[in-house]
Image 1 (cartoon, rainbow, N blue to C red):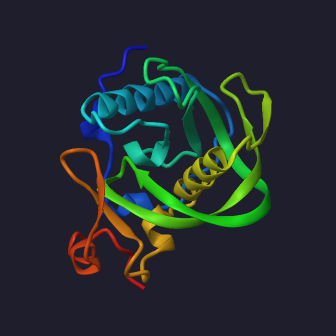
Image 2 (cartoon, rainbow, N blue to C red; image 1 turned 135 degrees about the vertical axis):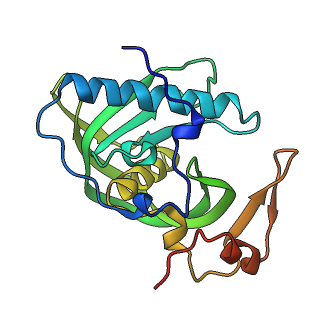
Length: 196
């Protein structure tokens, strides 16, 4: 299965599809396997074009498929490791610990980052590409944040939706790869914030 998907196939806000709920996958088919391949190919192409960012995860909705499928990078420290874990129908079964506010970004929100509060630990259940159940207990707050972010995507929610009214929560990635404060009005003009 060779994918022709590229970074151009990754939807970005304000595309309304990103705020639609994805459907559960009932049977893993050849189309599911092709979807996963398309997701990985698009994600790695995006990463190749972004020298200052690492692509750690993607949800199927981000390439326009309203299916509850998520890919997560196998190794967050090694940019050369291009392997991903596949989670089908991921579901957070338990939130644990306290909420921590950290900076978060998204392949579907170009150059904008935000300070988002998320639980420091989560337990997730999903199905692997082989059809077997997977249970994940997040090993650290970063993985917990990423899992919450991707499950949000499956539910039609983007990270900016958590901070729509927080005027000091947004940052912009500059050409040197540094994050800098950005005026809320500039973010609002981008059309990425959800209307109430």
